[in-house]
Image 1 (cartoon, rainbow, N blue to C red):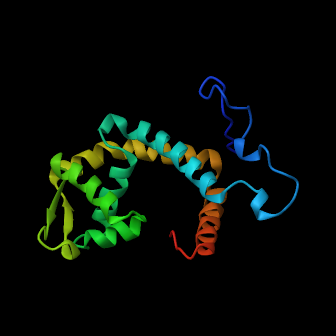
Image 2 (cartoon, rainbow, N blue to C red):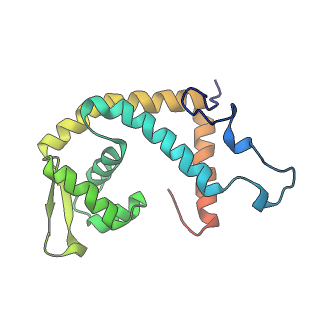
Length: 172
């Protein structure tokens, strides 16, 4: 089943029905006449983020916290500056997110005196939060990819890598 997204006037009183990226697109093939690549991807990111946040809400975690903790768990002992690079976050945003999770007892940070060697580890409390959130995340992941299609999703990931290469970045 192919997924399509249409704005609803109920949710967006000034929206015109149909995908907004298709609106006002001249027939010319000039890149300048196409929808902004950055805005298109950011809109999708916000939409997906809201969906995943809703799925994770019962566990008291959001999708950014989920991603940060999962990344820290995948790379134990790796400096937070490298975690920020892996997640394509600036260090300030990562440290802000980490400080909330430290406050909540989900993470412990070591090497506090030297920012370059600062690392984090997931506490037992953090592991319980991740375990509680796992079914919500998995449900949303299965829903999104199931509706979109596994092959289409794999193709999308490849195309996102290709798009990132156009600005000199690697998102994988």
